[in-house]
Length: 189
Image (tube, rainbow, N blue to C red):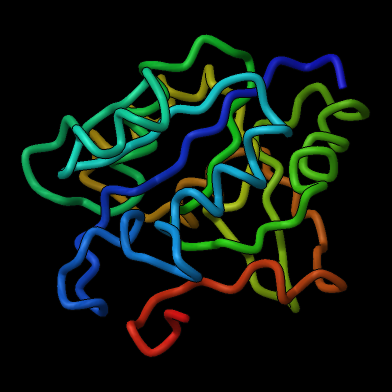
């Protein structure tokens, strides 16, 4: 693939369903969750940016491009996307969450393919079993301006933001098991 794509891994959540632990650093199969995501994503992109709001020194070991939400309070993943896009110097940005340790090894290839045939496309998002996966998407990095306007209206829903954009949904239903999130301590192995 000849496109320059950076990944933005969102690790800034509160982890409320996990006792307020930093989910990206929670051990899963003997290693922090984020390491599993990095193993899958790193070969698919040119650079990794991590959005985190705590334990920044620990996340620093995984990338030199680390961002913290600019919003004064936790506004969800879109605040992390907003901060992350400021650090990305590539035309396309892959969005993924830190709690999906089994993402497909062809995620970027499949999400990028619609951009080849449709240059007007702004977002290519995964859809699994009929449900959109807003944090498994490739977006045009230049959308930071549109995101400024959206957030300026005090809106923070990723799905609603995509509804204002030229968005294509890529069906990953045959790979549904790869999109499982680790959200609770009972899922840790």
